[in-house]
Length: 64
Image (cartoon, rainbow, N blue to C red; front, side, top):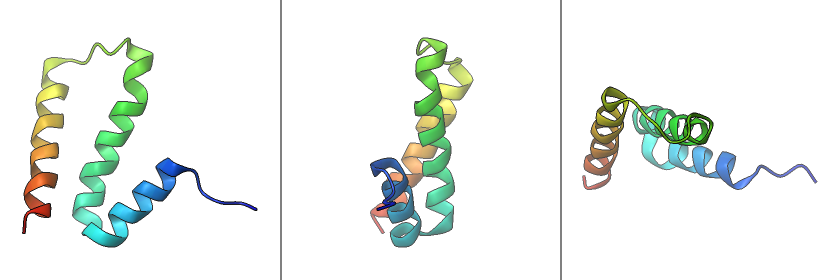
């Protein structure tokens, strides 16, 4: 069987349940997290601040 992994399943669920706007925010955060380990988790302050903003936008969209 060719079943999607848990990450792909989560991305698909976010898109289906929360829509394209939240999906785009989540997908950016997901990519950042997946690549952080290759940068020894040293993320520029600007990127960390942007991640916090996007996470807050996701949180707000879920409280509607």
